[in-house]
Image (cartoon, rainbow, N blue to C red; front, side, top):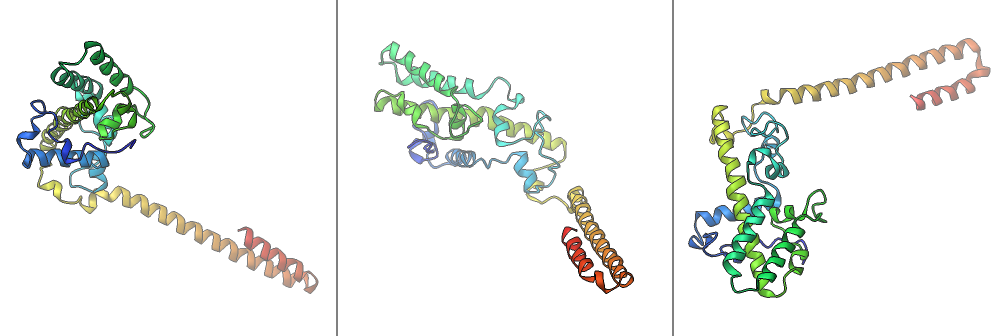
Length: 266
């Protein structure tokens, strides 16, 4: 099925033996950490600064990425931040392909292996139909396996190898990008006086004073508009009433219609 998430299922943890080493801790903290990361990653609810700010976490004053201090730290920004150094999605995916193919495809034909590798890299650069602003590799980063990937597999053994590649790739982005990001954030936040126990608290009301002031200004502006509108209506009514008495009864119906028309227009 296209677009399904297979990489959070238990049977795919530790499928790449001697490479990811996940199988050494089938029910331990490492396994729980991987499951937690992959589920949150798939749902795009990793604790980025954008999400922490929305949740009013103590000490988080804005949504900017503290590492590059340029862009808002969204889920997408995590994988493209310039502070990731030498590690990016393309490199980690290529490394995963090489490691798995070199380990489990030793008995396969060299030309088939080469073609398989090239096809995978070609697909990774194609435009995604699910995440339309990104390439297909971003689907794998999120943990989504598209049908296009399976179409390059000549048999079931190639499909198993492909899943092993995806499994290793997700492990690599967690280790080399997400965990490195978290370690850097911890050091930056320590310098800012933000510690783990404090982040469990909500921001003080004073921290949101700017937002409240903006809302108050909008409310006052709305009230002022209503007051002005009511004053104009009252003034118009009084003016036309005076005209009725001064002009006599012959013009009352015409002026009455004007009153209704003016009130509707205002």
